[in-house]
Each structure stands twice: as C-alpha cells, then as structure tokens.
Length: 153
Image: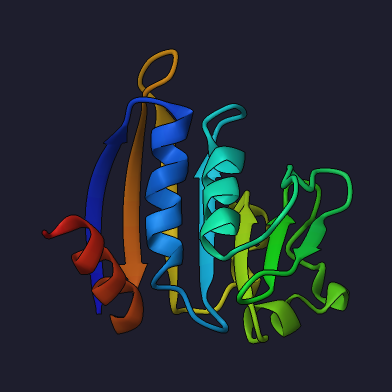
C-alpha cells in the first residue's frame, strides 16, 4: 500500500516538531529517507527524529563518517549516503535497515538499489528562506498508518 501527503513547514523549529511527532510512532527496524538539496532541512528533520526518540546531545550530519549511531528509547542510525555508490554493499547497510533501531538516510538515491521496499520516503524542497515543502511517500501499511495519524486529523 502506498500513500502520499504534503506538508509545509515555515521554520526549522516547525520541521523539528513535525519530525518529533513522527518519531512517536516509529518502531524497531523503521526506515525514513530524506531527499533534498543542500540546506533543504534534512539535518533539521533528523534532529527532530532523534529528539523524539529520546536521543540526548548534539545530532549533526554524518557527511564524513557516513553513519552516526545514537542511543534513545530506540537506537537511532543517521546515515548520509552522499559519498556512497550503489555497489557499497560491503558496508552492511541491511544490518541497519533490518536492525533494532530507526534509520534515517540522507541522499537515498545514492543507494537506491539497497533500500528495502517498505519505508517512508521524504522529499524536501525550498520554498523560501525558512519555508520548506515536504512530500511524504509511505511505502507499506505501517508508514501509511503513521502518515494518516499525523496528517489526516
């Protein structure tokens, strides 16, 4: 099952609050992908997910480390695939995707062939200096129910 929802955020703090709300519904093995230009708000969204999962401390982009791991009510795996190529299977990404935590992948198009079919794909576009358009594409019933709970109220 697949569904699509749109959301407009007017500030980084609003983006983080939205992500915190979504984090309340996430469970072990969940995967969210974030696609958008540099500065679109991928890291702001990831910070909100981390906060909603109870992660303490600073969360920043894993650009040069590829994967950062944080502990909260569930482990949070923050991945930046920008420097990866589709044949990066020796990194063991499936262990994160099928693991005991929540994974957020920035730049998922770089590893598209390795992504599981069930996930929440999020595309972020600049609308203005602080406003962003979010398109949520739920791939699977679990992600559809999360989006319905958040956006159809």
